Length: 481
Ligand code: JFZ
Image (cartoon, rainbow, N blue to C red):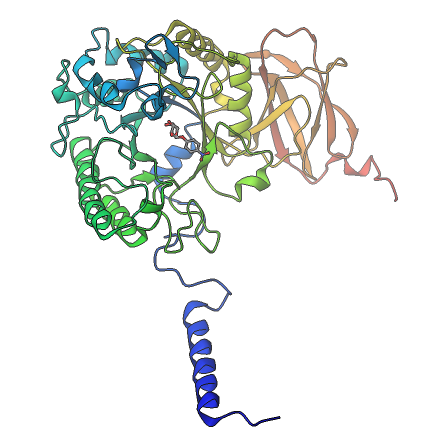
């Protein structure tokens, strides 16, 4: 075997040293990559603003913009995709869409009546679209001409909504799409130096608009970001991170979800070390985690449509339309897994909320009027889920709620409590005189026997529990296996 030439040897040694140095620089003690633009925090936020957000339970989403005018229909043809995406449909010419600005004049818009609907429904927060992907601004932004100010309506839409919802005691979060189909500087991908120059302008524009929103509406609680998945934006880790810091400084307590920025490796929602970016997980869109393990101890909310996938107003209103009971079950499941549930509404081009949505809001509100205690300020109860429904717990207490959606034929609801915990009192929420005597069936396991099995609506049973040392664990023996 020929000996290795000294020059190659030196090269190899240099490479090895460099490699070791590089590894030392990028890996910190616990095996995590050192990230400049990863998560700012590990674990949940512990401040009062976030505690308030966590306690909401139920929220409302509003998608409103120019897309409400066609409502998913153009020249008699129906676009079966989400109506707010109609501009991307071959069947509708883009100039025709863009000129809808000349027709936006919602004569029936009344912020007070929207807020009244939301209040009766029992929502604690609302997320409102200020600018969707089409780029049309519902506030008179000074950074583009494509705003409400240049529509026949002229007046700011966001201000009266923020005021009306606040008056109704409902917190406001503003939705903002980073992707902007109207701005000529937006790029899906940066391929040329010219793209890069344009996108730098776009970044300035985005920053201006966000600071403008925070300055104009200082009482909002948070920003809900969208349209952040394209290659152009996911490569802006340093810029987006800086902007996040700037927004938080301008607006202390601001709540931002995980859909705003990517880390330097382009990782979204969770950084390269799997830590959540932002204050809560924003990936639960039209889906709900199956178990508590799926949320990894993070805050989260689920945003849900009433039809399968329509956010903006849809004339056709086709496919499976969820019922109030289905939606209430989703709400219960979300809260039982430590999340908030946010139901979407898509008002029409005139500014009216459609009757089907009003009916669901009303029915939800009627249910909430009796059962809100099991939703607001509640958390994961730490108990085994049973087939009859969901458990929630009043945050930090021993008060457990059983949200019953599926009544067993036997009328016997199984409850399994942690060791040394016993039920002091069991009663029906809203009908305190209707009490139940739990039947102990095993150590820390009981049946609540319902008096009737033909319930018409989901209902709640409250369990006041206590930790005790004389639990019934002595009476029952575990099977030896
Ligand atoms: C986005 C928008 O494109 C849509 O129009 C609507 O505003 C919705 C709330 O958000 O759509 C998404 C975004 C993310 C996912 C799916 C649809 N996702 O993460 O699965």
